[in-house]
Length: 357
Image 1 (cartoon, helix red, strand yellow):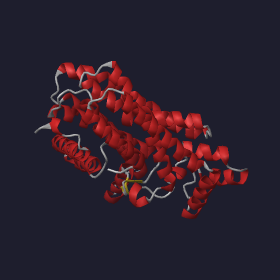
Image 2 (image 1 turned 30 degrees about the horizontal axis):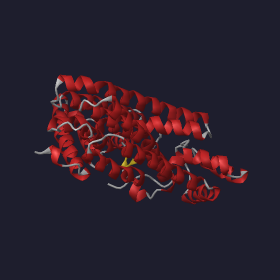
Image 3 (image 1 turned 120 degrees about the vertical axis):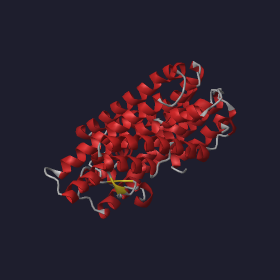
Image 4 (image 1 turned 45 degrees about the vertical axis):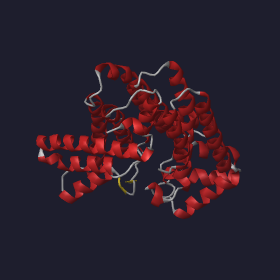
């Protein structure tokens, strides 16, 4: 297979999916050999991993590798595919922390295993069983990520080059997740603090660090690493800001989450911080009464949307997304990146800010 011939994102994603399919099939065989009781775990892991997903982190890692001009291979592709399993870990744990009932239009992992507990008539708390299982499955996904990387077939020298970026990506993700729940507990209304959470919780681990990881696999120099940061950091923040908008204004058929789910979860996003900065006192009360309200109705969500729009916060965040995207575009124009990779990274500017792939 000629990996050097394409930077077609859909083709690369299909190849990543194939690698993940093969990996999870082998791992699930091992789980079932350990005990038949692990069969539901194997099924859940496979469904969660393979049902959907844009594979942004493997895509950025693979394109980051192509940008070095080093010849790609099946082993490199397999190594970059391993990053998707870090994302799986984050999603499973995120749903527990946010008490989110759905993911991609289906029950979240903790809710699925809570239902299994009830169906089988098991003893103890069904809710706690579901939460405990989701934590363990998220941990398993993180272990699988490292295993897939280590067994990818890349040389020891290549692995050693890439491990620092792989480690940083995982550390920054966990740090960002903590900052996210801490900001909710603080009930902060700071745009600056919310932007920092956006950078660490999502931006860096979605774009900058995968690019660095791929670049390290290809033996990149410091100049290329800096170009990837100049591109990845603003684009990563734009990615999270789009996520913030979708969390309140998104169509459930597209997001896989109920309308206004970020409000129910009490998310302290840049969009809401901007709204609290701009809105009048009555409008602020509308926002405050929605945040963390598990019984939030669609009518209340619609009122919040109206407040956000009329305050000018939505327009300001859209402008911020555009400005950040322009900064990322500028980094591509001034950095030394192989032409194939530059084409793909230009396409990804739109994909990650408009969520189309």
